Image (cartoon, rainbow, N blue to C red; front, side, top):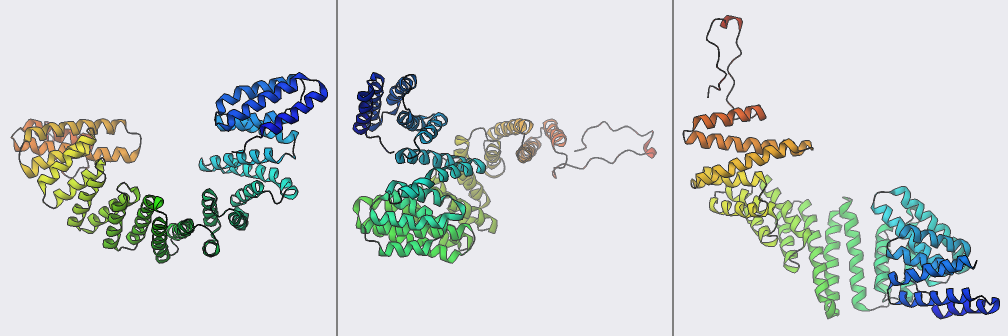
Length: 488
C-alpha cells in the first residue's frame, strides 16, 4: 500500500492556512498527519474517524477535499467498505486528475474489483472495472512514462486485458531488470507469462538475468510448472507436461540446496510437482509409475491433497480393472495418509470384502461408521459383513440394518436432488433385502414378509422380489379370491 508523506502534506496545508488565516486548514492538516502516522503503523481502523473528521471540517470550511478523499478512500477500501472507499478515490481523482499517487490507489482498487468480480463469475462487472482502470492510467502513462509505480500498474492492467496480455511480459521484464530480487514481482511475472503463453521467452529471460542464483532457479522452475499446467489442462502435450513437471522439481530442489532456509519449502513444492506428474502418468495409463509418484509425493509432504486424490482415482481404476489386491493395498495406504476420510475406510472395507479379508473389512467399516455414524450405506455394509461372512453377532447386524433402513428411508423422503433420491432408494432397498433374508434365516416369516411388502411399495423393480401372481381373468370367476398376501 502506498503511504502518504505526512510532513509534506501538513506543510502544504499549513502554508494554505498561513496564507488565508484559516484555522480549519490547520486542523485538517493536523488530522491528516495523525491519520497518516496511524496508517504507517497499520492501524487503519483508528485512522478512519480522524479522516472522517478532517473531511467534515474541510467541507464545512469549503476547503479542497481531494487529499482527504484520497486518504479516507484508501483506508475505507482496505478496512471493509469498498463501495464508499472506491467512490471517494474516484472523487479525489476527478478533483485532482494529475495527482499520480491518487491515481495509483484508484487503479489498485479497480483491479481488486475486477479480480473479485472475475472470481465470482461476473464477467461484465470485471470488464467494466478493467476499462475504468485503463481510462485512469492512460493520461499518466504519457505524463510520467518512467515512473516505476505507474509502470507496474500498467503491466497489471495489460496482463488482465485479453487482447493485450503479451504486452505485459516485456514491461515485467523491465521492472525485474531493475529489481531482480523482488519476489512478489517474480510471482506476478510468472502468472503473466502463463496467461500470455510466453514460456520460452520467460525461460530465456531467466537464463540471462543477473540475480540471486537460488531465486533464479526457483522461478525458472515456476515457469516450467506454468507450461506443464497449460499443456496438461488443455490436453495438448502430456509428454511435454511430464518433462516440465520433472524439470521444475529438479530446479526447485536445487534452489533449496543453494539456500538452506528454503529447503523445507522447496521440498513441499517438489511434492506437488511429483503429484502433478503422477496425474499425467495416470492419464497415460501408466498405473505403477503413477502410484510411485503419488507415494513419493506423500513422502515429501504427508498432507498433499493432489497426491491423495490421485491415489483415490488410481484405486477406482484398479477396482474397475479387477485388480482388487492392488486396490486393497492402495486404499490401505490412503487410510494411513488421510485417516479422517470415511470414504477411504469404506472403500478399503469394500476391497477387503471383495478379496475375502472379512475381518479387515469389518474393522474398516467400523472406522468409517465412527467418522460418519449416520451414513446408511456404511451401516448396511458393516452389517452384511457380520451377516454373510463372519456369521456372528447377528443381533448387532439386525439393529444396524434397521438403523440403515430408517436413515435411508428418511433421506429418500427428504432429498430434493434426483441423484440423491436414487442413491438413497438403492440403500433403502439393500437394507430391506438384508433384513428379509436375516428374518427368513431365523424363521421369522411374518417379519420377512413385511420387509418384502415394504420393498415392493418402495421399489417394485427390485430384482430380488418374487413375481406377483398372474392377474385374475373372467374364467377365474367363482374361484376363491386371492387374500392379497405375497405367496412367498
